[in-house]
Image 1 (spheres, rainbow, N blue to C red):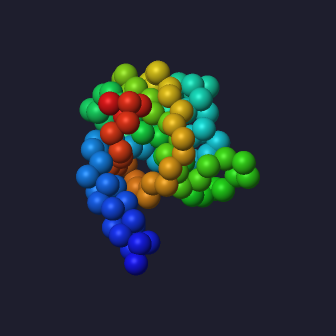
Image 2: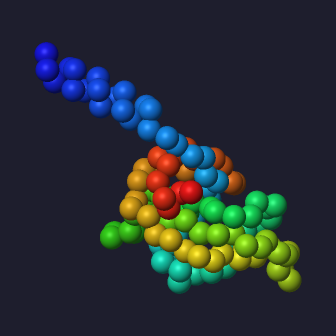
Length: 123
């Protein structure tokens, strides 16, 4: 009986915890971890975006590389610019990389919103 009440209180606390929405981008490994570590400051895409500001980097599930997170958020960066490259692709300029403790995120194509607990790294 006590376990049920503890579980109920835990669930209630989890649902009342403040959250924020952040924009996210799925990136294949090893590039997701390189971006999160600040080792990769340019991401090339076939499409551009008007979004500027914080961007959650999510490592895709495939390809799975041993020792690297997959299907999880790995960091936050600041998307400062998006410009056309000479070959017609888009160059996304990234700065201020901040690794986060990996947590599960269902990846999507394009930019998408993810609701996360309101912690200092997400504000």
